[in-house]
Image (cartoon, rainbow, N blue to C red; front, side):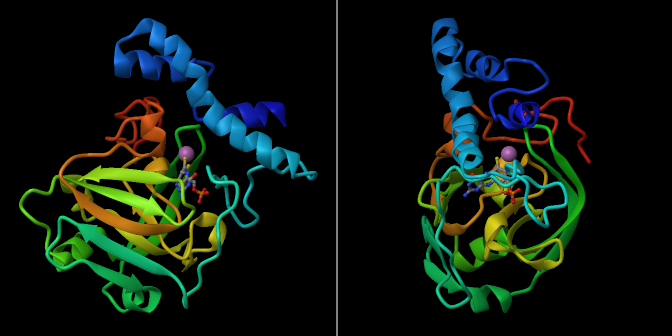
Length: 246
Ligand SMILES: Nc1nc2c(c(=O)[nH]1)N[C@H]1C(S)=C(S)[C@@H](COP(=O)(O)O)O[C@H]1N2
Ligand SMILES: [Mo]
């Protein structure tokens, strides 16, 4: 179990102390990098410690029907949201702020993408179908104002956040996803609605999505505060430069 867990740390992979490299690169301050590195590692380790303690089977982090997926949540517990009580709000620098229900989202045109999922800790799930509403469509409906530059995503776990530039958010391979692996997205995978940012590392794909706020500057998300790139292109960011890119 130990080797499996160390593979999972978001601060370290391939034996390289990447947490430290990330901070040195980001801040350009050697001393601060050394101090900050353990913080980056504590994020994932702390989480795994919590779950491992509750997991007598030793299957820490493995989803029951996951097909290679690992369960990640930086929040200790996440409420369930059903078709009856799920809400997604779009606000900020838009002309028409609005709150969507799950039936509202299901009634909109759906896009299906089949791409590889890649987490920065090394695991990868090839050819995973995701289906949902293009974020670009929701933004167009809301009427993005001229001063807008970025999007901030919030989650009903109360903790996780993500961000994209407006240009990234308008890509056709960025979805507000309702389905994953040809099933409605279950709770553990961030259902009923998660973000899916196909060309980027999976930490961009915020689970339990509840808010889309259009902003005038990028506000780094949860892992980005801890040193990961906002521009998390697979293979071209400080995630994992040797990862497959397809
Ligand atoms: N709300 C929320 N979204 C999240 C995370 C999280 O901890 N909380 N972890 C991210 C990371 S690092 C990964 S790899 C994927 C994991 O998704 P999965 O649990 O469906 O495998 O979710 C991303 N989205
Ligand atoms: Mo991840």
